[in-house]
Image (cartoon, rainbow, N blue to C red; front, top):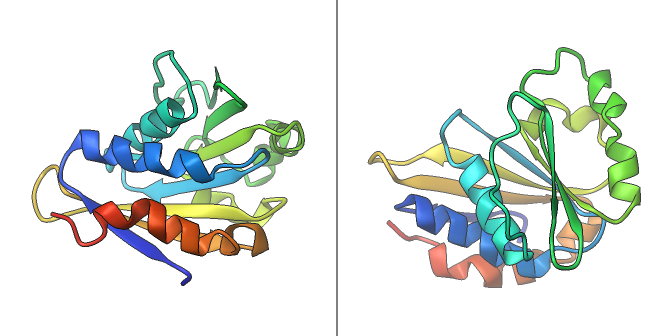
Length: 164
């Protein structure tokens, strides 16, 4: 299995999908989020953070480029590269160092910098569904570390497969 597609019908369900993914996260993981503005990327990160023990409020880092949250077991670096003008700027924000320290790095608009990424990642593509709150999320493992977790990913997200 190389892709897993899930559907949600409300904001809380998109958060719950993120929370379900938290059980598969390992130190040094990289998760790229792509999709239109308002498609649920930050809601997903809120659920992911909750699943990893973040107790503070998670907000979009659109205007600050990066937020950092302390989880129960690891630090989450939540980046938004929408405003970066050049691929090399992604390297200038210390991405490699964040990954090397054993943090989770989640990048909104991450598909824009995929060519300069230093390692394997999980891509999550967000799309709007038929009604206002419907979302489709497609999870695509890239590289051996995430491909090895494909079956676990499918199991963790099976509750939302075909939903809506």
